[in-house]
Length: 326
Image 1 (spheres, one colour):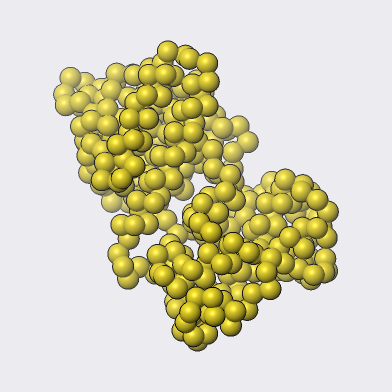
Image 2 (cartoon, rainbow, N blue to C red):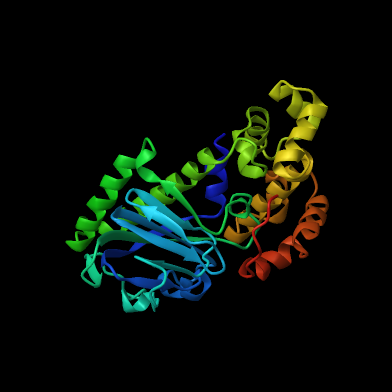
């Protein structure tokens, strides 16, 4: 089981490109919070992440209250939690709102020239909507702002060529170009996440570090591969070929929760997704996430979300919840 792909599926990631910018110094613009522009870019979206790919030149980026970072051609700036942030040839310039550069309501993928007469930066911006009505271990474990060197990634040249292709394809308004651009944007975001995970220091704690650990990663893959199975720590330890105590300690150290606690919370995330999609009655959903009785499932779900499954299906799925590690 590919755990990262499994988690990405639960948030139903959907992306698109929204700016193809030919920027000339001096330039500086501010992107508002994802929550403020989500309804403009993707009506109905709960959460919005932003990525900026620097195709040529260089620029600076900074989230509100964070440290500025210098970014060069071939790098991607990721703002996964939708924080308000500033991009520019220099951050000492007065930042204009992004709608002065491009209209988020009707994005044009034809290249837009903006700024002065100085050094050139070619910037492609994309947004990614994801569901936030249940905690998610991936989004809870990545920072407000980070960069990935796309050109150092094995898939980097292919993705960059694909981005350039869809920009030209969209500008010519070829039928289906919007769908192709959306898929390339989603691949870009996934590769940015993979690059971040692989670049993490070896001693980093957290769920992402657990993915890289051979034993904890195997344990996570087992639970994600068969979430309804009657797992015990002993059974997981046997499958991962280490002792029960070592697995329990290592898992809790990296992931921040004991294995069985993590499994329960992951089951509830899966159940929330099924309830959101209205997939079957409660008894079938309970069985699908490893509960023999509907009553036991109801108790576990209410402990997790503060609502019964039926009430959550009716009301709670419309309430955005904070990202949190299972």
